[in-house]
Length: 264
Image (spheres, rainbow, N blue to C red):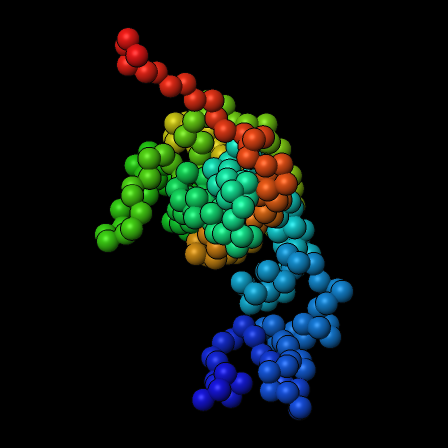
């Protein structure tokens, strides 16, 4: 059976082939919407993401919130481990795909990565706007998952394990996204920030803000994890390209001091 005649079962995408070429698309529909006839030129990129993941077009409020969240996450910056991994791959001459895979691999974990956002989103599913439930969860940590490949979190998901006070950028992101949000999670987070940070023993991180925004948008933990990984790639790509052009002699390695043996 050829690929052209194979039956692909998906509720996301429908294609009609050209009459003279079964491999060329005459019309493509995403969740029922004509992509090239209706969406192209009318919808934002983030609207398309919402449609793909949620299965419906976003409301104007949801569209504005996801667009703002995409800006906030677009470039984690060169001090972020995932971006630094892409930079290292770029300066070493790796392919474009390798640079992005490096960013995804390093940015997938539980320290500011995709898995941390998934755990934080699971917290919103379990606790909602119940302050007492959040206090217990933040103090005890997420429940263990038997057989999981992930180690137990070393800090409360969504909070900064190295921070002393909430970063200005995190506060600004929280305030702006709350103003745009059609949901209640961001509002609850901002109104109860002091209580939640005290329970977590750490200040809020941008990953925690992102999780609350994704919860307000109705994404499941698995969807939120995937979308968070995707939205952070532009910065990793741009920094990788910059380092490739600058060369290894200007690569920002951390300062290292080597101590030899006495008398050497």
